[in-house]
Image (cartoon, rainbow, N blue to C red; front, side):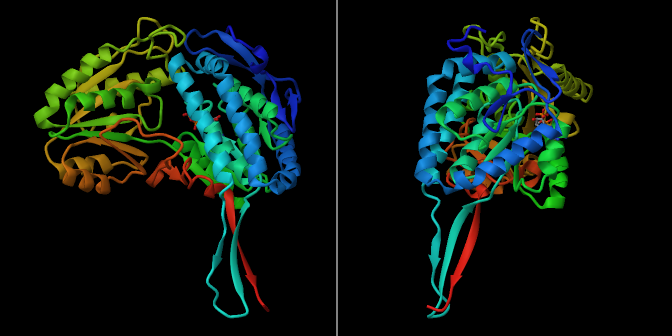
Length: 483
Ligand code: ADP
């Protein structure tokens, strides 16, 4: 890695304002998914180190809570600015450990920084309310207070943004936070911690610990001092963590798996729909929870859409994320590739056909050909399971009722997309889709201004937007009598 300032490449964790090794000196390897090369070793921490980070957060809480919203905003603003000043180094670290193309990594750093900027401002407006009284000698007042020590467990597909989307509102609301990043992508998290320290985030207010997910997750969910857990990751792990949080009744924000449908009606602008499909499906090589998992295309435009999408998919350059012009990096690991292959094999045995791609890419490692499957039906695994890879299965439909039924026939309810120009249909379909977010005539919907989150088993709570800070605030009702 050729960085401008290698001070951002950290291989120790930040606990209580100190850069720290694991108690027993243990480490684990961080590899570049494009080459398999080990790029760093980071601490393999467990329950003891986690306890220390929680205790430090608790000790730092009173002072951080006492700061005004404006004072906390000044620190967050500085963190935001430092992220943008160091965008090239951060993006290079991110691409090297995660694989996504450098341009996409830079986009993620901007997106990640936007949450810090946004919540710095929102923190200043965490207004309470005065309620109309029920008796002349009483006044009813509602204030908002930080929930207390928070924990975050984050995934590898957005190594920067999934941290700032949690740490931003937590810190702005006056909560300290302990972050455990994914094992595959700890370096981006540690670099963000280094910048937070430089920005003036006090010791203990933000700790980042890497290591054993079971041990660290066990302690974060068991410890009574932790009042809230925010998790982004798989639905299965989300269920486990929710159960682990039950004995201490922790507040929970969960951003879990999706199974996004993308519907193309026969009145859609097909070229626009293909452009949206590409952005929604192949971004991050299909490894985002809002990536389209299932395409539903009306019978009348089915062949034309499949042909245009396949041509576009064939034009996507696959390669090292640091190479000019590359838009498809490797998948995160071998297990991810095996899952894509299994979904393709299952679909082919049940009557689907490969229109383009279908195999591991000649580059080896985790590289996979952008793939389009046609003649897909409801009996196939791709209808129910999130593939999390560059595979576009295209289903055929012929009525609005039928496609809405199929789109909603899943335990997930994160993002959905559809293309239509008919104003009546747009409202009917938007209201009928059981999803937390709906993209209409677009395949890209995420930004810091809008609430991100799902319904059904896709999770609890919303991140980003002016709603996002509420998850880190408690209401307190003051009843003042005897006036
Ligand atoms: P993915 O399938 O995207 O890797 P995971 O849900 O397995 O999603 O991982 C998301 C995050 O959850 C990562 O930081 C991972 O280390 C963490 N994690 C996985 N299993 C557990 C667990 N049992 N307890 C706590 N954290 C876990």
